[in-house]
Image 1 (cartoon, rainbow, N blue to C red):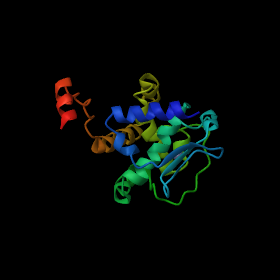
Image 2 (image 1 turned 90 degrees about the horizontal axis):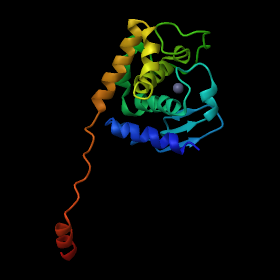
Image 3 (image 1 turned 60 degrees about the vertical axis):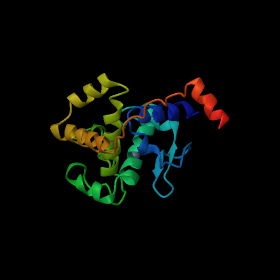
Length: 187
Ligand SMILES: [Zn+2]
């Protein structure tokens, strides 16, 4: 039931040259508990009901998956040293995971209410909003236009981090001409 979401998000990452980020995820599955990224076995669980909760920046299934990929990116692709470098902007991603209560509205420094519950959620939400611009550009621009310079700095920090792991999109394989194929068949 998440197949379409997984396929479209995977294709999107590959098209953007960001396929490497997904390469170490072992499994993405549907769960009944809250959606998660489990760093111990590098798996992702998705609960479709989480898209109904009002506190993330967007409420679509691909967004939910990209949010969890944001945790994977921070915890598996980046190192603890990398994460330390943006403590000043996001707070300490590695601080003990105790979520603060969700405020009634998001402030100008955060993309969503959920982003205000813990630095790890701030990072994952910012990551998801940054990439969501490819999916709903107008909505993302609208959201960010009401945000502070610090919030926009977080988004551009994520953008730079993503650019640093980008690999060129591989060109389509060149097909062997029939003659060459024939030759190969004989050898
Ligand atoms: Zn999260």
